[in-house]
Amino acid sequence: MSKYIERFRTSERVLHWIVTGSFFTLLISGLGLYSRLFNGYFAMFGGGQNAILIHKLVGLLFFFSSLYMFLNHKKDVSSFDDADWQWIKKYGGYLTRYGLHFDIGKYNPGQKLFAVFIAAATVVLGVTGLFIWSPVSFPRWIVQLSLLLHSLMFVGSIVFVIVHVYLATIGNPGTIEAMLYGDVRKIWAKKHHPKWYKEVAGE
Amino acid sequence: MADTVKAENRKGFLVDTSRCIGCRSCQVACKQWNKLEADKTANQGSFENPRDLTPALFNRIRFVEGSNETGEMSWRFLNERCMHCGDAGCMKVCPSPGALYRTKDGIVAYNKERCISCKYCVAACPFNIPRYDGEDKVSKCNLCLDRVGGGMAPACAKACPTETLKFGKRNDLIARAKSAKKTLYGENSLSGLGVVYALEGPPEQYGLPASPSIPFSIFLWKDVIKPLGILGFWGSIGAVLLHYVTIGPKKVDDDLDAKEEGHE
Image: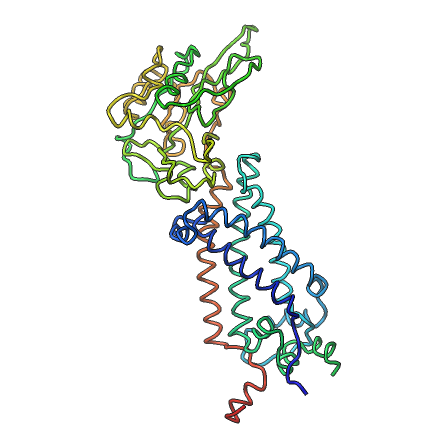
């Protein structure tokens, strides 16, 4: 019997990496707009005007792919059960060395919050991005508010993404495989997502 | 001032609106010196023309038409242009070094070659002044910095037949206006405007904000969110690294087994 179980289908993994790639392209192309401190990043795109153009085009890719990814998983991430509340009360067991176990389904509450936050940020960044796309076409107060919200959502996203990357890699050994070739070890699934494992493996 | 220009070195205008006759010589002289194309306009029932600044119109006379207490027609004229703020919103938000810059005279000048067309300056200006030209580059009054650099008065002030527009050392102009008992607008706002007005009524009557300031959302964006974001970035990287070396990763059981048995 195989030691592995499939966690993400190929299409889900490809979509995830499209979202990832567009996110980091947006980050790098937008840094020079965020602050003059990061003006040097414009050179990677052949100047500020090109960086803005790429930021706009990749922004469209990120908006639609990120939103599509959320809608695919909406059912799994939009409700909390009793085990989720237990997880929240104990901070998911991340603040103790003692191994805590929760009867978690496919996603734990942290992952659910991350998914919902990124979906909300995607909508806000997309809508405000549209106003910033052509500032002279809209009333100034809308553009001013958009610049504020766009930067606020960016800051929130980058903090969430740093935590996401940590928890999905060195913070939880064995997790990254799920997004690389799709399969995780059964023992990983039994520990981190026992309820999901029972549903899928029937054990 | 956010930059390094000393107050005594600043040059600017004193605009005495009581002297203005609305002849618009300043508009025409500006167009001529700066080689700006004519704008197509339409009669909209007012002598004010054009009705707004354009990429090819760096200053214009705003006509405030109304009637006084006795029902007589009253006209007020205001020369509208870039105010060359001491604390300039456009310079605060511009992400491209050298696109908007301050000269040693305190002028807020610009270099179109450095402009990256982000239009942040349009949103950040307290007076809604910058416009974008056909090549998508910033455009506004540059206070004839070539003339001023050569010791001459800007074209508008040179052409003004009534001395409404007086150009010179900002401190001297303000001192003279004060000794003439004028009520000044812009002396201290935004670290002192480069264009100071002697108005004949409240600023609102001229369409000027009573206390001009950089828009609050722009302040939050640049002075609160931006530093917090940099703190959040390094803070969260620090936090996850600290977590890794203190509490450590969540290993699944067979990782521990493998360590104990020494093989897998």
